Length: 337
Image (cartoon, rainbow, N blue to C red; front, side):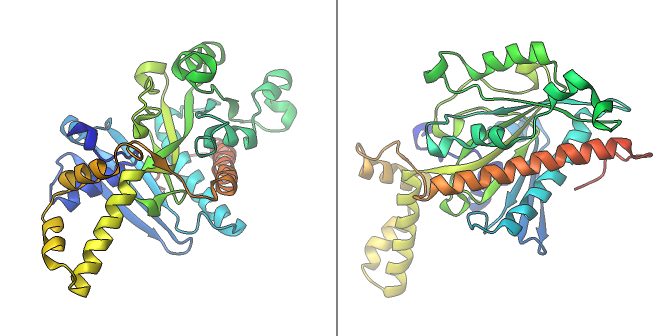
């Protein structure tokens, strides 16, 4: 049944799948927050036990999801609000993971993905818009910039194995030995289970990332165990499995047939199938031409450019806020976002 598993990188969607099947996952806690002013929904999925991690098939840690329904719209004000919220969440995670008293931190931001494949170009585009300053601080020092505290930011785009012949993790390892960052932030495009979340959802996780896992192309994990420093992952789903679209269409068809009272026997038979059986049927119907195909919206070119600015702006704001926060007396590193 593994080949019929729903592919998704979002912890929220994995948790929702168990809820739909009325299965309680022990060791997994979920918290939801409505930000009505910004028209955002924030969901925290916390995997607290090894049992929860085994069932969810994700490492223990915190997965924060920002659902922004209007993220695909060219509304600069709305994107600014999303960037501010992203910065708040990043500050909280960074403060709890790497902050030490009176120490400037060094951050390495990694843009994962293939610049030549538009849905996979999120990471490289974010690095293009990022305000890197490590070279300036190394040359002139922070006091030449008129500040007492700075977050040293460097960025890299390792490309993909087909372009370099090397694992991204191998390249990042070498950079870490030279740069010695306190934290790595990895940016990557994700796969979603639901079409409504494409390019409208941002996931931030303090557990690192497994590049390509959502599309079945598993690469070396990037986390504290493999790199030696904490890793925060930021991802936006840009593709969905073609079988998911067909499956959702079948569900809508069944509901429409029931309401119209057309072919009740057929609709009843289809409705009796569980999710795994339904997806197996779907894959058999679309095989071999569409099996394993992933789909992205037609306006992905404009969208990926727009949301890459949103993510990079969130990172820039977070680093600026951390530098300012480090100067404040009596800072509380455990504050909630």
